[in-house]
Image (cartoon, rainbow, N blue to C red; front, side, top):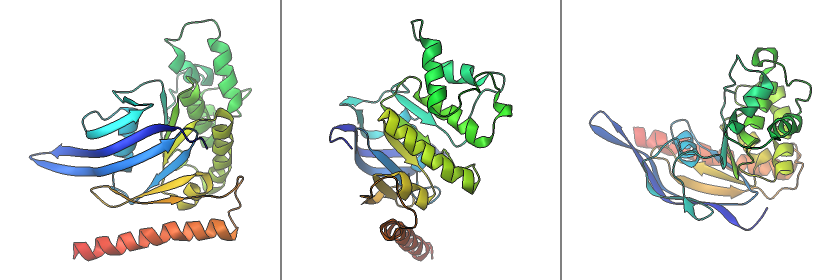
Length: 258
């Protein structure tokens, strides 16, 4: 992991207007993400994780505070930030190579076809260029979505529950693939997930958010060598530490509710 801070989030606050009422969704978010780091954000449903990710990709505009990428304030979506959603969102009438190549439509040069092919190969879909999304499994479709997010060589890869719709065995396999791709591309990654084991397996740090308004309650480092052994004592210890935070959070939320 590099020491250079690529992403800086400073005192970010986000409010939604619902009817005549302002709803605080995020409050005082401060986080620095280093170049090449893999950071996971976890928390209970409704704590603002997806809103936080939408701010990073530029799909949410109005907020207080600063979100800086290499010292420049984010201003709307950009090809320097790629995103993968829980649903692959491939266009069903296009082949895989055309889906992956969508992000290169405005790119000049004669090597676009090779760039697309390289990224299809990167995610393990060699031989499926002419296939359509309906001909692929869920895991293969997510691979294509990852290739599409990476084809412009973004500085940051943003992942919103990218493996949440997969069965458990496919999900574990795709976690290995995601780690492999992250290493090969040497890219900075920020992932939202509900899966604690997934966060421990993939992350350099885990950001735990509290209930609404979403705040960063704790950041837990994951100083484990890779590839990681899910059955090891240290892996289980960190997993239990994260789960304990969730249990405490649930107890606090229940006590507040009554």
